[in-house]
Amino acid sequence: MTMKQRIESKLTQAFAPERLEIVDESDQHAGHAGHRPGGETHFRVDIVAAAFEGETRVARQRRVYQVLAEELADRVHALALSTRTPEEARRAH
Image 1 (tube, one colour):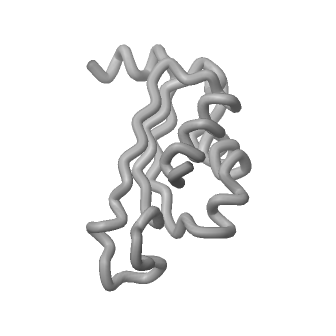
Image 2 (cartoon, one colour):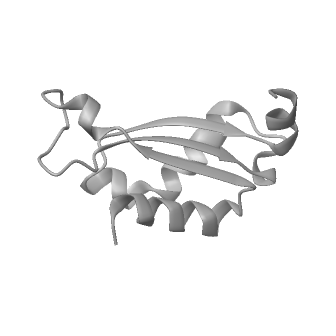
């Protein structure tokens, strides 16, 4: 299972998102801190889930980091996160 698949599986199980987009941006970080041969170190995650209702942006991000603690301790160096509720996602369009 790739790191992207692991992230997708864990976030889907934890938050039952309406939308989940995970982009491996590791190739953009070659030569920077945390980059490793083979990539799978830097990801951008856009998640839209009702589970975030009533939470601050920081609380949402902390929840995502908790779910992905094992991956962050092992191979993932960086996550760029967008965490929105379905209503926030609808207003953005």
